Length: 252
Image (cartoon, rainbow, N blue to C red; front, top):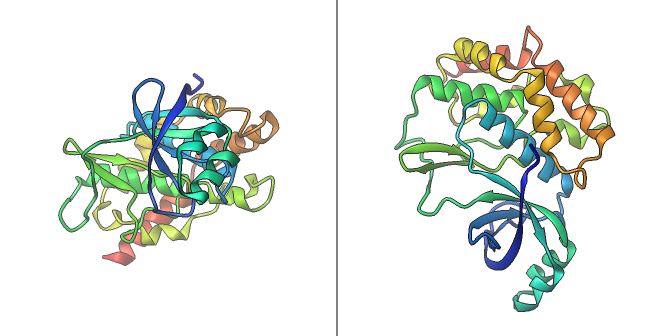
């Protein structure tokens, strides 16, 4: 299914975290969303990574706020006094990435919250699968909302796509950066998570997720490369899962 499309109606407030300069925006459905701008320095690949990783996580049963495609008009910049924000809005006219804003949510604190071993193992496995380098103690990109752990901010996932145009050759890479994952110490059921998650993320599911990425961000020929990479990455034996288990063993 394609992403639901909404239109940005009002720029509410900037979120100064990260290099993509996200913001909270009100849309024409009266909802509040965190928007990632197509005109930010990191470009369209961040929007692709957000969509692909976010929807794959949802398909695997992990909690991710609803994702939308958000149209934005340059005239929205008129009401903003900050020249930097004005320039960013004007550069982002068209289709942008939006994710539902969770009011009252708090940043996950690994010292205060201890997810159960299976959930921790599934998230570690998933981030190794999607090559997400940004779920560390320094920047967890996890929220607690209604006593539930939610995954956000997947713009750093699929980092291989910042290299060669065809990155399918990297599909069997082990992803050693998993050693820095915030939940790795709790991920004591990685073997079970490997079996469960790989069964859920079938080639058909991957195809459907890739079809949801707007062509404006990723044309069909490029979409096929992402799909081939993900399908190949799931073929056993999965080096990324083995590396996660090795890293956890060394950690304890």
